[in-house]
Length: 265
Length: 250
Ligand SMILES: Nc1ncnc2c1ncn2[C@@H]1O[C@H](COP(=O)(O)OP(=O)(O)OP(=O)(O)O)[C@@H](O)[C@H]1O
Ligand SMILES: [Mg+2]
Image (cartoon, rainbow over all chains, first blue to last red; front, top):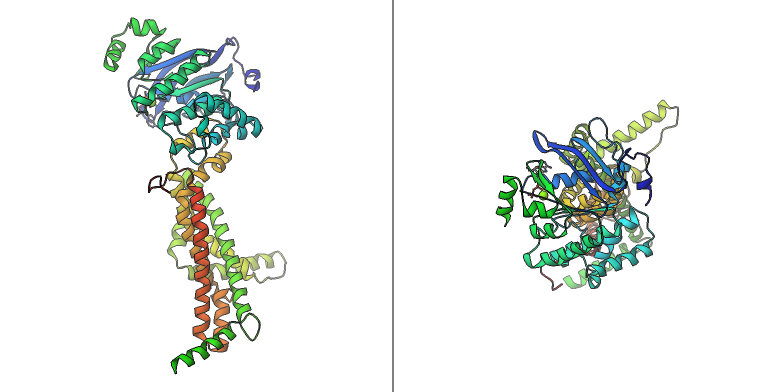
């Protein structure tokens, strides 16, 4: 859909190659301030990895980008289109949020496939019902995507009958089916048995190398170093350090990051 | 000669149950049809109320939630027979007062409509609780995924939440359906010609109480057995995505 790019609410001066831009994002849950002013930009084709300790706000930050959580304050610009907010910080237009979301492919730690639908049905669900793609066309594309993640044989199987790695690969196919302008991964391999991690990382590596824009929250440091263009280390709701992976992993400047990297091996 | 007496008895019983007069079979079947109509209507109305009620309780504001709590508590606390009397007479009365105030002639509320309305309201209270529990049993991640992909609320309910909660709701809904079929008998009290009322009439006229009540019992049992089969199939379909608890054998 080109309407995202053509939307009038484009920020003056925003570079057109920005896929996602987050400015001074704050988020509190009651009295608990989880994000204390996080800013990040993902240019088209960039892989931005977010690392950090448990509870540092990585998931919250990712979820704010597609408004699964409502930011307390801050601005979010997706493909040049700024999300309109009311003075109280809630989105002004549900439809705008839905339209933006339908172009952000989110992949969850717990897969979150729809268990009453087969893999094929999971993959065509959003294209057919949200984006209005003709069913036959969606099915063709879905078969191609399932083949790409190595699940052709399982198209008519229900998710509960598959391994975690297979489910996550199907969830990635579901995200690809919407032809996402950017993909959001929240610890996609954390719920997997160690021997299944590789197959999922393999798929993500492929996607990174074909120039997909993605924001990737991960605990897999080696992987982040390998695929990311830009790494953000989040600590206590603030960006403690960021930069290219060689710098962050090779020559961390802050003590906290050094300690963190040591603790995760 | 008990055997002979029994045979004679059976013969007269069968005569009494014959479809056309002097048999009363047609009356019983008409009663059964009426009972099923009310049960269907009430169950359907109850489902609609239940879906709305469950969503209201889960996502509504405080006032709506309080109102729904009053509704489910009161309806489930008061005996259905009393509710039927209250609602039937009170509702008829209210409708007529309204009509009179508008200068329209009074009406007699049809037993069918009143029965469906009254039992539907009762069913709705139980269905609200059954469906609320079932919706809460849906893994939140599945609903979140639908939101994350831009599904608007109504589509999300129709495509994700409701089908996903079905496996958890069906056992409770099957119970509600059986209760609906049997609660239709309560409408005999307001003189509606459902199965129990027709049976009473036939039995009273012929004095063959045992024959007719046994026949009515058999008809109710038949309805239950057929419903059981249908609900088992429905449950199997609704659970298609879930591995059997017995393992992969079945
Ligand atoms: N819905 C919520 N309500 C209240 N507190 C929340 C909620 N979601 C997250 N939090 C809190 O916000 C903080 C940050 O959570 P978040 O999930 O973003 O951390 P994370 O960096 O993703 O951690 P992990 O690596 O364990 O996934 C935590 O202290 C968490 O308890
Ligand atoms: Mg997290």
